[in-house]
Image 1 (cartoon, rainbow, N blue to C red):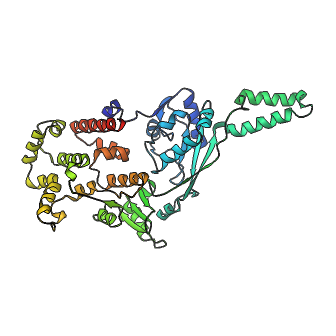
Image 2: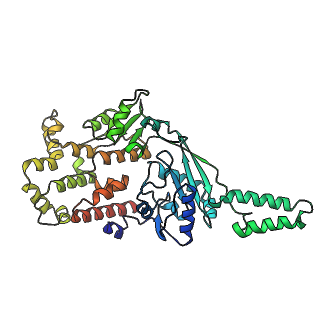
Image 3: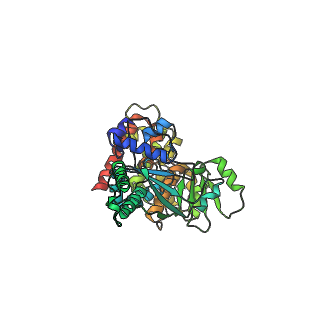
Length: 416
């Protein structure tokens, strides 16, 4: 992970928290029913999640009050541009973007000396069964300020209004009340402290509830794709709703999703695409044995690549070259069976979202594909950073370096 940190691919956009911000963060933790952190310095992401606090508490989702009740913490406007590193729902980042876009000035004002607790209320007190996820419709985003500054402001304004009535300006008791409030909270008269609840309408989404579930709504029937075998079995026994249910490791899942027109594929000339080349490299690295060179050197040197490819036994070589071999055979015979030549994991990794989907929907489907077949390191990093960091630790150090360099090059292309 040190390499990733050095190259700004892990934690670079986290916001440092120290000094008075620590106390402010702890006040927010107390407000959502959590114990304060004992750390004097840490960092947070856009939703207020901290990797250091999560490690301290041994709880990656310490901001949640149960799976149905996620929270967020805002203590600085710098969180606006920070990503959400460990989202519980795929739409968490969208909700935070909505908050910062709607209330930029008010957030700046409040976080001068206070914090904001965000309650993402989907009107479900607790989950009891997987089909509860289908109740996600409109999420009410509510706000609570540290020390209830918005309420204190109203009290100050009422006191001032009362002070200006009749002869109250000579009332010593009102003077004392105003001074006490000002000493404790400051002069709040001109502060912008009111955050009205927002509504976020959910579409299809992924949630970590019930062991991880993809909920695809925009189909003839709702589709639920489970990562957990336990919750999958419970869901298929529930006949109360007419839904389509899959396990993420079902052999024919990708073919089913192609049939539903959620996924598509096109192998014609695919060997010219960058995505094909990096997936092919991943499949190649998986088959390597008795390596005498750095993997990065092998992947960057076509002569070495071919040398190691030809040293593989025929079955491993077919796994790496199956797509190109299939395309050659199909040019001669259109009835050539794909399954005879292309490894299922390789094929699954080459599929893509239906072109008719919106960008947000495509991102969700890309995330699904990285979970079905995590063979594309760039898409793992883009669409499922948590899983990327897990897989990264298992890779050869030289392959890690190759992936880091590749991701940096792609980011530079995007910036240009």
